[in-house]
Image (cartoon, rainbow, N blue to C red; front, side, top):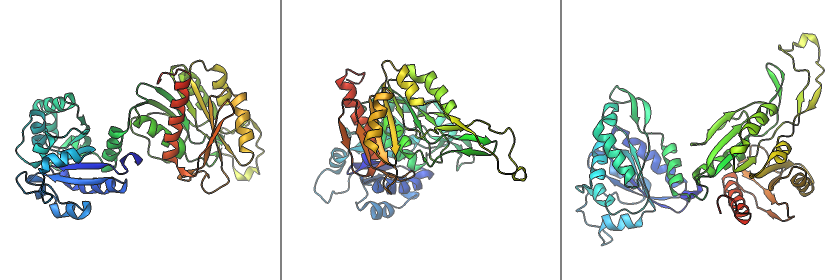
Length: 405
């Protein structure tokens, strides 16, 4: 969530049972580096005390439009000008109606008329209220006015009804707030990616694989979605939360991954192959579990198809990016792959150090290009590497007249 670093966020809290989740959201935003101020309606204070938000945020809570601003200004104007973004969570039906029709009868609704920053509305209410025509009409009006409305979750509600109306998880709200703030320089660009390891069956319960966690590929997919790209991620088996807004295609073996990539590559503008694909598969994979009573099995390996080389031979308009994880001679291997596999760029990293090992949250990489140039990065969080990689891809595509020029 680097996009929230040093951002000024207004958090609006209204009078719904989900108001308690706003405390966790406040914490998450602060953890991501944002400065947060809280505006509450009178009804919200019946669910969570203002002192809680004041103690956590370090700022006075704005409750009454008529209360005197200790800084001597007009608070609803000053705070509106101060904000880089506004998130209202939860937003009750009453709050939604006020915002849709321009009412200004409390601190929050009055302040919102002066806001010019991006706004994220998170409605939460009884299912029947949420699905009612007036509420849906009001939500449409908010979206038409330029605000972003987050669809509520479905599930068991406090009122005993099951259906849509639950406030989404605070981590999801924070994630969507990040997307709201990130410039959309990849809007309309179609990105096809791979991530994670592949698994090559020995028998129905055993396989050959590697230590890839999928973190780098998932970070790139998430960053590209934030920036407006249409992302399809072909993923091997990993234990990671899947990026929001990204199409998921799950595979296991290298041959399955290749089939998907060949089928989808023509529709892609950018292809980024991050997956650590097994170079070999088992030629004599057993149909049933191999029993130890049968003695040590003899496993015969054969080469898997080279996915990156296959894509490089077939590409037309696509910008093709590969990854090279090596234990030595990184530059030599990476430059050889660029030429041999017809790549537009390759990201090389040594997997022998603690900052580049599989599973680490950091990565130390070098970008290599067909013209012989290269750019070495220091050890950085994988989320930051993802953004720098997308920056580099955009710059190179502009140079050759790509779709994002």
